[in-house]
Length: 150
Image 1 (cartoon, helix red, strand yellow):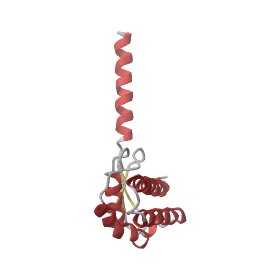
Image 2: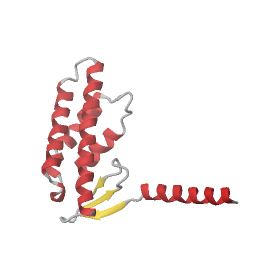
Image 3: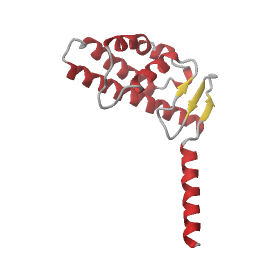
């Protein structure tokens, strides 16, 4: 009987932990921008009206971390999204840190485009670096949104 109680308590705690980690929040920022946010999943970030971020985020999240396979066409299609990140960011998310991360993403993207004729190994490395910089941006955006929550 004692074992059953322990198992029930453990299952309840595990279920509660899973629900907490899947807790999604919709936050309205000062400028009226709605942000879909999950404190436990940085990749689950969606910002209404910031299409440049949404497009780049979708493409870069879709890459397999082991291979970083992406066609030249998809790389070139990222141009508009990445170029427009800083010009279309909602005012409430425009912090110095976020703008620095956007600048880093732009720099890595330009490096990738400039070296598209390099060997595949170099291209994959550049894609990996771009994805890492975008991950940094996503992390900083999450931290900025967390400031609204707390």
